[in-house]
Amino acid sequence: MKKILFVAVAGLLMAACNNVAQFKAPIEALTTQWDSTTTVVTNFATLLTQEVQNAQSMATGLPVSEDAMKKLDDATKTRLAELEKAFQQESQGLSSIKSELDGFVQSWGEKTQLLNGLKEGLASKKLGKETATTISDLQAAVTEAGSKVGAWTAQLNATKAKLEEIAMQHAKAMGGGSSSLIGG
Image (tube, rainbow, N blue to C red; front, side, top):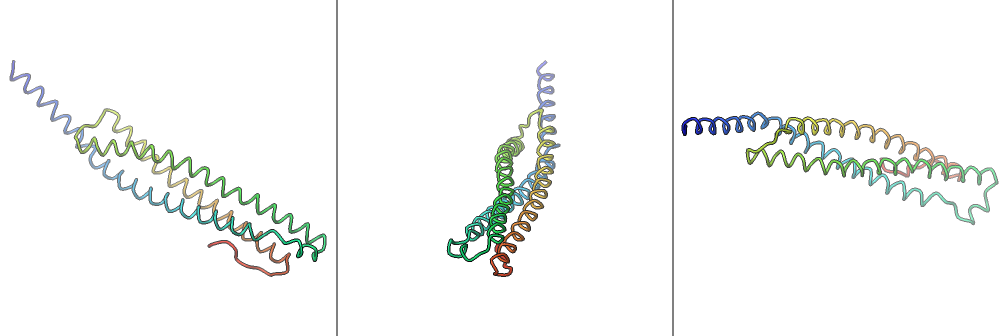
């Protein structure tokens, strides 16, 4: 009877070790992808922060002094007011991206804890029944992150181009020609 019990326990231990072993490569690959994607998200967040600062800096240069306004005709004054309003509206696009990114980063941090749990389980050779589902969910999160950063980058580039165009039109309306006022 003791032999049967010993064999049963040994069989369970071997099954548990094999269970952990089957997840080693997927967890290690996921960890590599996760780290790379985290870098991409972090770099985009840094870029976005810089562009928001550039837009804010550019916005402070748009309003025209009272003395300069007195020298302008009504049509130019109206055009400048329209351009300043358009700039402000376009700038909201940056705020929208930042808001989405902030929510995503928070969610990413929570999912990072799940990945850390997998790595700890792998190290201690104790993974739960939900391991395959968790790996799949986290791989989907990596794919989603790539898609989101791609979409945000396109939005950022479009918004930057619009802000640049508005700034150039503003400079022309003031008689100053064109100038590049936002980071590129």
